[in-house]
Image 1 (cartoon, rainbow, N blue to C red):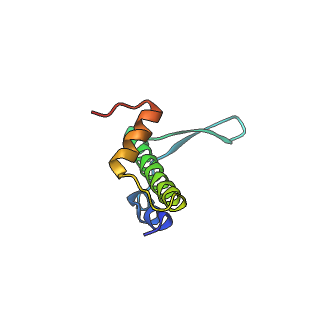
Image 2 (cartoon, rainbow, N blue to C red):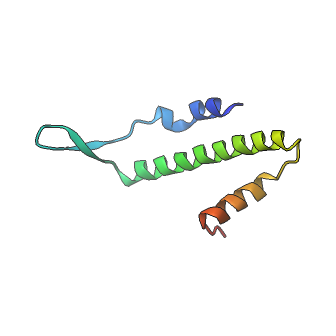
Length: 88
């Protein structure tokens, strides 16, 4: 399954965000407000998309290196270390 197929299958595609807009004097949208649950869902899906991209990049790098691959757990641990995350 390609990254595009995975993204198309994500459940957020079927979810309507409950957004309220803040407008300026001319009625132009300047900010958006949404419930914390929707915000957290967006963050979760962004993380999923990042993971998909990391996987696709790792596959491409593996192909360039002639098939010397790295386990997903090791890849994610390196990503977490680079970002300064500590996941117990």
